[in-house]
Length: 398
Image (cartoon, rainbow, N blue to C red; front, side, top):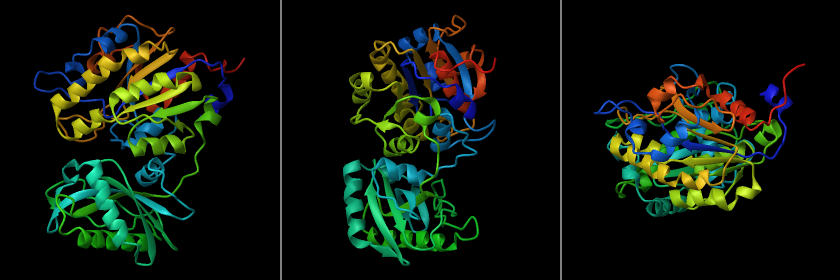
């Protein structure tokens, strides 16, 4: 990062990073991954003019969360810069977070006795979720002496901000990460986390009491307890003017934390791609985030994830018409529908520029990326590769 900062120069050339969340997959019934099975003529044609490769987002064998995966794409070592999901979601929804406050990402869930039967409460509609948040906000103002503030999110998600003395981010997630198993309470992970664990577990109990007559959202899970971090900003590091084009709060929040502006990108994939064209003259680095590849993968929906790839491919010409100096298509982690969750598998990437070593790939997919000219590299090296292809790095040394 320090080397890139010393070499970075602003020449006005433009870069687009298209992140299809959870893009990587595993072979399905016909021996192809979702990306390989998708009908995507635009991506496949682009692959023939691009460098293809694979990214390890954290390290070999490590399954990344969305936060670490994105930090890696932006050039940060996720082992050095650990940012909790709670603060990302909080920033994304515009929550007020003060010194010492602790944020958590909440999931509404369905609970039968002590058993979690659905971690996402059927992915309830955003509008219904917001009404549940209103009900909670009217009923719960304080827990165990800690003040509580609620913020609605997308679908089953919400944000809670805890304020008070003696709170800490040193607590485990209160989420079993599986269905059909008992609830997992928050536990301290370091000395000083005991009070926060008590507050979190008392909060979950209170939510369950308030929502006991609701369906399907009759309880909640909490993840990513975190406060605001101290992190260097992308404009200062790379001499770029970056913007995030995303619809989900967490990704907007992460973009804000690393110094990006956040565009109003609407709610649909069409709006997402239209937004890039609308603001293209104002910025030189565009982070464009597509969520639904990950959502369908987590649902175990092979066909659904494949169709999202096909939808994005149909919209891709809107980016190509802008003629960016560098275009990268990749993901922040792999979410094989075969596993219905994140995995440790390296993530495919495609890089198009005037300086790409082209001609060795016939299509965009994991098998082609495995032997592509881009090789297999650390995810955090991608930003340097993009800057180099945009001719935005000076020579190193004499």
